Image 1 (cartoon, rainbow, N blue to C red):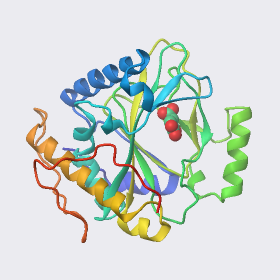
Image 2 (cartoon, rainbow, N blue to C red):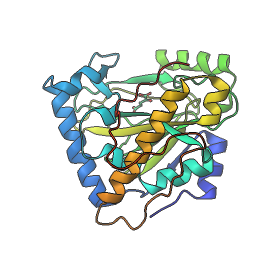
Image 3 (cartoon, rainbow, N blue to C red):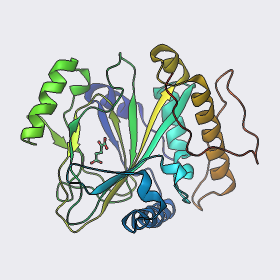
Image 4 (cartoon, rainbow, N blue to C red):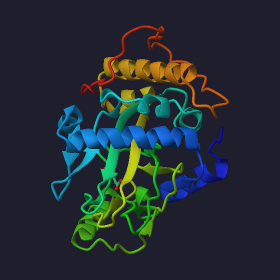
Length: 282
Ligand SMILES: O=C(O)CCC(=O)C(=O)O
């Protein structure tokens, strides 16, 4: 299976984002589309997932939080994709911890906008803190793809906030570029790169799964969450890897070998896992 290249990592460091083409295969994409469509339908029908779905500025649903805790057959297997484990080991370090997972969707006709912003927890040092954004659909200017301001992850906080404010008045920021994606592509975006998207007026549904990842050592430095919460997240990742190993897609030809960071518990097959995994503040 495909791995991120050193050139892609260098592009990311310089620009705060990178598009990695052709990561997912068609068997996984088909399941991703069917299962995410089912969750979106559940939200629109005011079923259980609706309670975990945020609405955007236009008050339409667009952001399903705690994705794994909404029963589905695709999200933990997606997290366990070897492309993800490999890039996190190389770009974050072997003590990486998957911490957030969401499904963002732009409904056809009236899909939510996402004003220019940096992500939460973004006022940090030089660490490579980023999201892994996995696309099952074409995402284009026409169906309101994400735009980014290359290099803005290196800006001082005040400059970034001033520019984000400007972008909320007029979306067309100087230097902004569209991150146009095809099914199976993966976008990495630094939490500090300015990004946003417009309302979707097209007749296409556009979806993306966001995985935000941190590490044990960063958590010890920034004190985001209680160590127990991080331990639970490592258990969730171990369970996800087991799920993909024992329920592979037909085109899977490898699995990611993961060793929990020192001091964290080892998950045993059959043990119950908390898929909600609350991030209790430190
Ligand atoms: O997918 C999008 O349009 C942007 C989502 C985003 O940046 C966010 O939810 O923070």
